[in-house]
Image 1 (cartoon, rainbow, N blue to C red):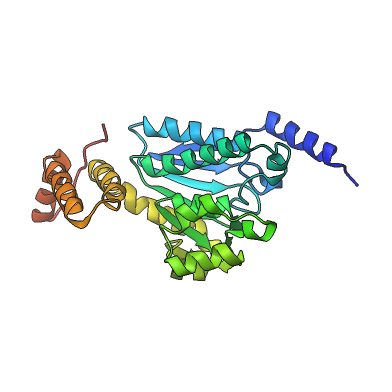
Image 2 (image 1 turned 45 degrees about the horizontal axis):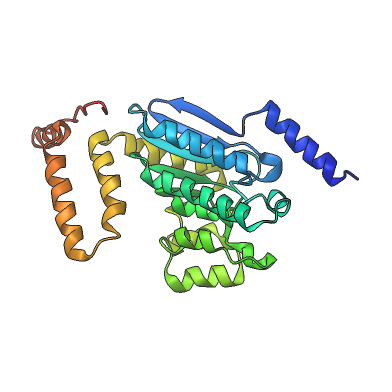
Length: 275
C-alpha cells in the first residue's frame, strides 16, 4: 500500500511533467481544461494560480469570443485540495487561500466574454462554486453537485457567495447545511446550471451554445456582460439609469447599425471584429 509521501511524490511528478491547466484556442473560443485527473481537479494553490493567469491572459485578448471551462478525467472539480490545506494549519494561510480563490471566481465574471462550464462527474464545494461563478453551465445528466464542506465540519462560506446568487435562499441553505448531493436535472431546476443533457450529448450541447454566442456581435456581448453583473447590485432606479446609458452607447456601435440594417434588409449581419 502506498504511503502518503509516495502519493505526494507522484502528484508532484505529474505537476512537473504536465500542465495543470490545458488551453486550446479555436475560432475565437478558448477551452481551459483543469488537468489534475487523479485528484479530481482539486483547486490546489498551483491550480488557482494557473486559472488566474489564464483568465488574466484572456481578459486582454480581443480575439477571444467565449471561454469553456472543463475538467480532465472523471470529474469537473472536487473543490479545494484538502490534503494541501491540512498541511498548513494557520489562520493567515487559510485567509490568503480563500481570498485567492475568491479572486479567481471574480475574475471569471470580470471577463468581457462569456464563460461556460462544461460539467461532468462531480462539482463539489469550491468546484460547485466554480460552476456557479461561470456565466453559463451545461452538465452531463450523470453529473452531481454539492457544497459538502459541512460533512467535514466546514461550512462552505465562500461557495455560498456564488451559490446564493444562482439558487434561491432556501435551496442554497439546504445544500450548505446538509451537504447533500443534487443531480444535474435538479441543478437545472434550481438554476445552478442552464441545461442537463445526456452524457454522450454534452460536447454537442456545449458546442451549440458556444456557436450561439460566437454568432452574436462581439461588441454587444462585451457591453452586455459587464452591464448584467453591475446592475444586479444597484437599486432599481439606478439600474435603469445605468442600463439606459449602456444601451445608448451600444446603439452607437457600428455593429448595432449593421445588425438593424441586416434585419430590415432580411440578410445576415457582418459583425465587426472585436477591438
